[in-house]
Amino acid sequence: MSHLSQAAGLKWARLMLSVLMLSLLMLLANDAAAALQLSGRLEWVHKVEMRAVENGVIEKVLIAPGEHVEEGQLLLRMDQREAQAASLEAKARLVRRQIGLEDAERELARAQELFDRGLIASEELKDAELLKAAALAELESAKAKQAVVDVLLERTELRAPFEGIVVAQNGYRGAVIYKTLQQQPLVAVAPTSQMLARVLVTSDILRRYRPGQPAKVNVRGQLRTGTIYSLGVEAVRIDPDGAVYELDVIFNSNPDEILRPSEFVQVTLP
Image (tube, rainbow, N blue to C red; front, side, top):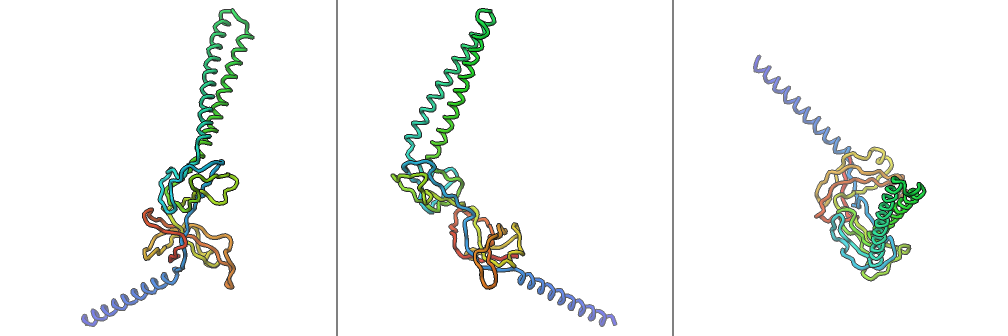
């Protein structure tokens, strides 16, 4: 009787194990079916287009398209002679105004001493105070003009706003640039630390997701972990099945690898 009970128990255990394994397989199959796999393409997270702020002549171009640059790296320089001359003039003006203020302060101190001794009237002391106030105002005005000139000098150079890659370079040494006639940017830079995988989906699919949800991106056979970055607001086209929108997944990339926009990738949405 005990042997029959053991056999029955063993049979029951095997049956339960089979049921559990079948349930697990069904669960995995459901998860796989729930995941949505779509073809997409790569895009820059953002791109900064840089133009000349003032008229001038390009003096140096220090980069080429496809070149990796560091934050703050000099990319292009305009002719600086006029801006440098204005900077020297502003500095000289500032020195003169500083000397004028020091003279006014000495005159006020002397007038105060004479007034305290009863040798001059209060009107003369007030005149000295007004002269100091005027000298101080002229100094502040000179500082403001110096700041404006420093900005103009700084704008003769284009520097990388972040670490990234040069996407476009349309400026050449000797080219005359007019700030109001720049159809193309002189330099365009995009970051390489992150990329976007963009897929096109219908509104029914778009409503399933929210920014921040996890997603997977298959890039050249390598699976990357990403998150949903943005959901399209305006339709890019109208198909017979309905409106089509953009859905972007952001993921980290290495600056050393060369990923370019429009490359095809596979995106897996939960």
